[in-house]
Image (cartoon, rainbow, N blue to C red; front, side, top):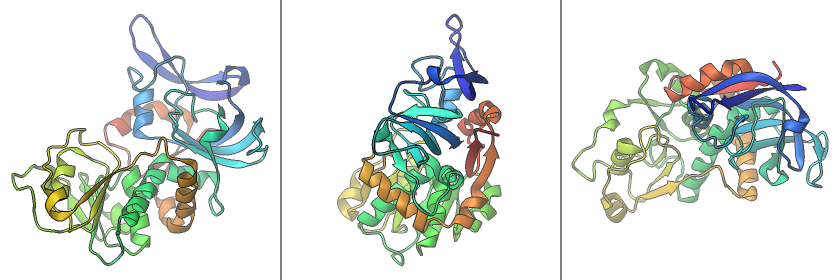
Length: 330
């Protein structure tokens, strides 16, 4: 028997409740690889799955946790053997399939990636889905011509998980980084990650009638969406790109097509869930080489399985800073 955070639903009231329980190997879903989980994280999706109503969960009881890192215990797939260190992000694990908030997980071999050299499992989850998404965003911006020296790169929602890692990576790569935050008290934290400018959220959250403003940003990693993304599109330099990774500010986009037509601006959608294997490996290798580990350490907020119900509620309210790393064995 081993510990897991189990979300259960009361069929009469429709309410869900999450708590740490003991489960066995026979309770795990069927798949090729059983992993002894060492660390997981807390993401916005996790907050939805833990919280009242269960969010993205369709079947109960359920074990959330959309990412994890650990050691293979058994595998019927030749790509992995006992003792291999692995990372999992995406594939709707933690939503449709039991996830990483458990001391053991059983998943498909196709969903795993070997832990890259230079990272341990704790560091891999300090990166987690948020950092993996941030790296995909940086790679997409680079693929569309963004280079250091072209001008400042904007990161919205900069104090969050994706924003924190994006800020640190961009700064290490030599970019001038402007971090947008609605929490003034996070300014010193963002500067410690490498941000050179702090932009108050209210400066970009209002819609304006002009479809174009002064050309300011050479690139943008946007975790907010909504009115802020619309505003930023009108401030991009000619030919520059925005990598859209989130919708913390809403799913709507009250924008015009003018920035695309008159400035050749690109809006790049970043999906981390269904990324092909080769691109996953490329991103994790870049993380190992381009994310400063001392900066990563400064982002970490440690947690245990029993902390998760509280943290799940806090992340939905935007009250979590940096990267929560869950030691499932603590």
